[in-house]
Image 1 (cartoon, one colour):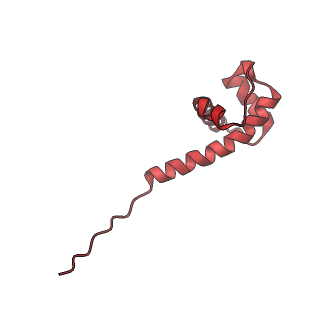
Image 2: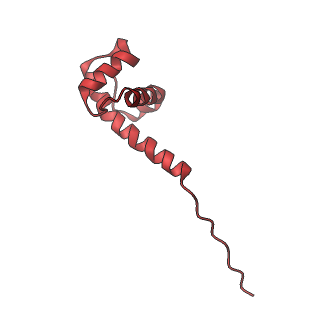
Image 3: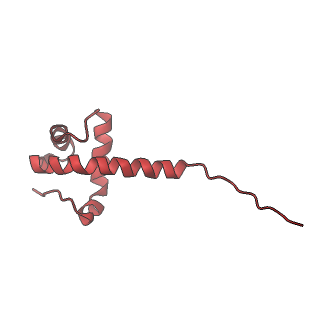
Length: 89
């Protein structure tokens, strides 16, 4: 049984698992800040590592993940303003 961590290295290593957890939570309308909902989510996506401690850590990580994902999507689709250069004769 592997313990989840609040470290930069662990997040980088398990980015796909976090993305899957966030997508599953949004499909099932789970509260990503609730440790009880995260325990139910862990039973779906990672039943081997479904513990209370991992659910608490996941409930702290997913709001950060959702914020960064929203910011990344907004920046990707943000319309860039085209500026024309002035020609001075």
